[in-house]
Amino acid sequence: MTAPFTNPPPVPQAPPAPAGPAATTLTCRFCGSVPAIKASLHGHQGFIIFMRVLTQHGPFCRSCGIAVCRDMSAKTLWQGWWGFLSMIITPLVLLGNLITRVRLGRLGEPVPGAPGTPAVPGKPVFKRAAALGLLAPVVIASAIAWGISSDPAYAEVGDCVSATGTSTDPDVSVVDCGDASAGYVVIGKVEDTTDDGQCERFAGAVASYTEQRESRKLLLCLGENG
Image (cartoon, rainbow, N blue to C red):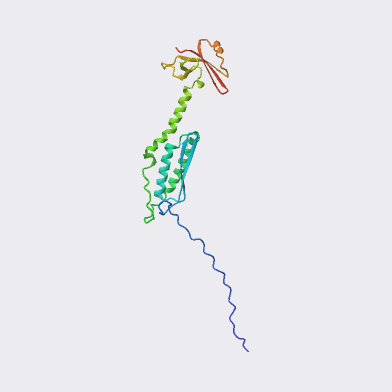
Protein backbone atom coordinates (compact mmCIF):
# COMPACT_ATOMS: atom_id res chain seq x y z
CA MET A 1 0.00 0.00 0.00
CA THR A 2 1.09 3.52 -0.66
CA ALA A 3 1.12 5.84 2.34
CA PRO A 4 -1.26 8.79 2.01
CA PHE A 5 0.44 12.07 1.13
CA THR A 6 0.39 14.63 3.93
CA ASN A 7 1.41 18.29 3.93
CA PRO A 8 4.39 19.23 6.16
CA PRO A 9 3.51 21.19 9.27
CA PRO A 10 3.68 25.00 8.82
CA VAL A 11 6.94 26.64 9.83
CA PRO A 12 6.36 29.30 12.49
CA GLN A 13 7.05 32.79 11.17
CA ALA A 14 9.02 35.34 13.23
CA PRO A 15 6.89 38.31 14.27
CA PRO A 16 7.58 41.48 12.28
CA ALA A 17 10.07 43.84 13.85
CA PRO A 18 8.42 46.79 15.55
CA ALA A 19 8.59 49.97 13.52
CA GLY A 20 11.08 52.54 14.84
CA PRO A 21 10.03 56.05 15.74
CA ALA A 22 9.45 58.23 12.74
CA ALA A 23 12.26 60.69 12.13
CA THR A 24 11.22 64.21 13.04
CA THR A 25 12.36 67.16 11.00
CA LEU A 26 13.68 70.09 12.99
CA THR A 27 11.72 73.25 12.37
CA CYS A 28 12.45 76.78 13.52
CA ARG A 29 10.78 77.54 16.85
CA PHE A 30 10.05 81.09 15.70
CA CYS A 31 8.63 80.65 12.20
CA GLY A 32 8.43 76.89 11.65
CA SER A 33 10.73 76.95 8.62
CA VAL A 34 13.16 74.25 7.54
CA PRO A 35 16.05 73.58 7.53
CA ALA A 36 16.87 74.34 11.15
CA ILE A 37 19.50 73.40 13.71
CA LYS A 38 19.57 72.97 17.45
CA ALA A 39 21.54 75.79 19.04
CA SER A 40 21.51 78.29 21.87
CA LEU A 41 22.42 81.98 21.74
CA HIS A 42 23.39 84.07 24.72
CA GLY A 43 23.57 87.63 25.94
CA HIS A 44 25.21 89.16 28.99
CA GLN A 45 24.42 92.17 31.17
CA GLY A 46 26.84 93.47 33.77
CA PHE A 47 25.67 95.55 36.73
CA ILE A 48 29.01 96.31 38.49
CA ILE A 49 28.33 93.84 41.33
CA PHE A 50 25.54 91.74 39.82
CA MET A 51 25.18 90.27 36.35
CA ARG A 52 22.63 88.42 34.24
CA VAL A 53 23.05 85.87 31.45
CA LEU A 54 20.28 85.71 28.85
CA THR A 55 19.63 82.65 26.67
CA GLN A 56 17.50 81.89 23.62
CA HIS A 57 17.17 78.24 22.69
CA GLY A 58 16.50 76.95 19.16
CA PRO A 59 15.93 75.24 16.85
CA PHE A 60 16.65 78.17 14.53
CA CYS A 61 16.35 78.57 10.79
CA ARG A 62 19.04 80.64 9.09
CA SER A 63 17.12 83.94 9.07
CA CYS A 64 15.66 83.78 12.59
CA GLY A 65 18.90 82.50 14.08
CA ILE A 66 21.00 85.24 12.53
CA ALA A 67 18.47 87.87 13.65
CA VAL A 68 18.58 86.62 17.26
CA CYS A 69 22.36 86.29 17.18
CA ARG A 70 22.86 89.85 15.95
CA ASP A 71 20.37 91.31 18.41
CA MET A 72 21.79 89.55 21.49
CA SER A 73 25.41 90.16 20.49
CA ALA A 74 24.79 93.85 19.82
CA LYS A 75 23.13 94.36 23.21
CA THR A 76 25.95 92.46 24.91
CA LEU A 77 28.51 94.76 23.31
CA TRP A 78 27.24 97.76 25.28
CA GLN A 79 25.61 96.08 28.29
CA GLY A 80 28.12 93.35 29.04
CA TRP A 81 31.31 95.08 30.22
CA TRP A 82 30.19 96.69 33.49
CA GLY A 83 31.81 94.58 36.19
CA PHE A 84 35.06 92.73 36.84
CA LEU A 85 33.64 89.26 36.11
CA SER A 86 31.60 90.67 33.24
CA MET A 87 34.82 91.84 31.58
CA ILE A 88 35.82 88.16 31.46
CA ILE A 89 32.45 86.62 30.63
CA THR A 90 31.42 89.01 27.83
CA PRO A 91 34.18 87.98 25.36
CA LEU A 92 33.30 84.32 25.96
CA VAL A 93 29.61 85.00 25.26
CA LEU A 94 30.44 86.85 22.05
CA LEU A 95 32.79 84.07 20.93
CA GLY A 96 30.11 81.43 21.55
CA ASN A 97 27.59 83.44 19.51
CA LEU A 98 30.13 83.80 16.70
CA ILE A 99 30.59 80.02 16.52
CA THR A 100 26.80 79.53 16.34
CA ARG A 101 26.59 82.27 13.70
CA VAL A 102 28.98 80.28 11.50
CA ARG A 103 26.77 77.19 11.84
CA LEU A 104 23.67 79.21 10.97
CA GLY A 105 25.38 80.61 7.89
CA ARG A 106 25.82 77.08 6.53
CA LEU A 107 22.04 76.50 6.43
CA GLY A 108 20.05 77.02 3.28
CA GLU A 109 17.47 79.76 3.01
CA PRO A 110 14.18 79.00 4.85
CA VAL A 111 11.76 76.99 2.69
CA PRO A 112 8.68 79.08 1.76
CA GLY A 113 5.31 78.00 3.10
CA ALA A 114 6.22 77.79 6.79
CA PRO A 115 3.50 78.67 9.34
CA GLY A 116 5.29 81.90 10.19
CA THR A 117 7.45 84.41 8.40
CA PRO A 118 11.23 84.17 8.92
CA ALA A 119 12.72 87.17 10.70
CA VAL A 120 14.71 89.80 8.84
CA PRO A 121 18.31 89.51 10.14
CA GLY A 122 18.93 93.27 10.02
CA LYS A 123 22.31 94.99 9.90
CA PRO A 124 25.45 93.08 10.83
CA VAL A 125 26.63 93.76 14.39
CA PHE A 126 29.63 95.83 13.31
CA LYS A 127 27.38 98.16 11.30
CA ARG A 128 25.26 99.00 14.33
CA ALA A 129 25.85 101.77 16.85
CA ALA A 130 26.20 99.09 19.54
CA ALA A 131 29.54 98.12 17.97
CA LEU A 132 30.98 101.16 19.75
CA GLY A 133 30.65 99.00 22.85
CA LEU A 134 33.92 97.40 21.76
CA LEU A 135 35.56 100.62 22.95
CA ALA A 136 34.19 100.10 26.47
CA PRO A 137 36.98 97.78 27.69
CA VAL A 138 39.57 100.13 26.16
CA VAL A 139 38.07 103.13 27.97
CA ILE A 140 37.80 101.23 31.25
CA ALA A 141 41.38 99.95 31.02
CA SER A 142 42.62 103.44 30.17
CA ALA A 143 40.78 104.92 33.14
CA ILE A 144 42.28 102.32 35.47
CA ALA A 145 45.76 102.91 34.04
CA TRP A 146 45.39 106.68 34.42
CA GLY A 147 44.17 106.28 38.00
CA ILE A 148 47.16 104.12 38.87
CA SER A 149 49.64 106.42 37.14
CA SER A 150 48.41 109.47 39.08
CA ASP A 151 48.03 107.70 42.44
CA PRO A 152 50.82 108.76 44.85
CA ALA A 153 50.76 105.25 46.31
CA TYR A 154 52.49 104.11 43.10
CA ALA A 155 54.95 107.04 42.91
CA GLU A 156 58.66 106.33 42.67
CA VAL A 157 61.72 108.45 43.46
CA GLY A 158 62.11 111.01 40.69
CA ASP A 159 58.37 111.34 40.00
CA CYS A 160 56.84 114.79 40.30
CA VAL A 161 53.65 115.52 42.20
CA SER A 162 51.16 118.31 42.55
CA ALA A 163 49.88 119.07 46.03
CA THR A 164 46.80 121.10 46.87
CA GLY A 165 44.39 121.14 49.78
CA THR A 166 45.41 121.46 53.42
CA SER A 167 47.91 119.71 55.63
CA THR A 168 45.13 117.65 57.17
CA ASP A 169 43.36 116.94 53.88
CA PRO A 170 45.95 117.03 51.08
CA ASP A 171 45.18 116.30 47.44
CA VAL A 172 48.37 114.82 45.99
CA SER A 173 48.70 113.31 42.53
CA VAL A 174 51.56 112.28 40.29
CA VAL A 175 51.97 114.58 37.26
CA ASP A 176 54.49 115.19 34.51
CA CYS A 177 57.51 117.12 35.77
CA GLY A 178 56.92 119.72 33.06
CA ASP A 179 53.37 120.37 34.25
CA ALA A 180 52.77 123.79 35.80
CA SER A 181 51.26 122.14 38.88
CA ALA A 182 54.32 119.94 39.51
CA GLY A 183 55.55 121.74 42.62
CA TYR A 184 57.42 118.83 44.19
CA VAL A 185 59.60 115.90 43.24
CA VAL A 186 59.80 112.64 45.21
CA ILE A 187 63.32 112.36 46.67
CA GLY A 188 62.62 109.56 49.12
CA LYS A 189 60.11 106.74 49.53
CA VAL A 190 59.82 104.71 52.72
CA GLU A 191 57.43 101.78 53.08
CA ASP A 192 55.72 100.58 56.27
CA THR A 193 55.83 103.90 58.08
CA THR A 194 54.02 107.21 58.31
CA ASP A 195 56.72 108.84 60.48
CA ASP A 196 57.60 111.94 58.45
CA GLY A 197 60.57 112.54 60.76
CA GLN A 198 62.42 110.02 58.63
CA CYS A 199 62.53 112.57 55.80
CA GLU A 200 65.29 114.38 57.69
CA ARG A 201 67.77 111.90 56.25
CA PHE A 202 66.94 113.01 52.70
CA ALA A 203 68.79 116.19 51.77
CA GLY A 204 66.52 118.80 50.25
CA ALA A 205 63.28 117.45 51.73
CA VAL A 206 60.86 120.34 52.29
CA ALA A 207 57.58 118.43 52.63
CA SER A 208 56.22 114.95 53.12
CA TYR A 209 53.19 112.91 52.22
CA THR A 210 51.95 109.98 54.29
CA GLU A 211 49.28 107.45 53.48
CA GLN A 212 47.84 104.38 55.15
CA ARG A 213 45.52 101.92 53.41
CA GLU A 214 44.54 99.13 55.75
CA SER A 215 47.87 97.67 56.88
CA ARG A 216 49.95 99.33 54.14
CA LYS A 217 51.83 102.48 55.17
CA LEU A 218 53.71 104.85 52.92
CA LEU A 219 55.92 107.91 53.37
CA LEU A 220 56.98 110.13 50.48
CA CYS A 221 59.65 112.75 51.09
CA LEU A 222 59.30 115.69 48.74
CA GLY A 223 61.73 118.25 47.50
CA GLU A 224 61.11 121.34 45.41
CA ASN A 225 60.78 120.71 41.69
CA GLY A 226 63.31 122.78 39.82
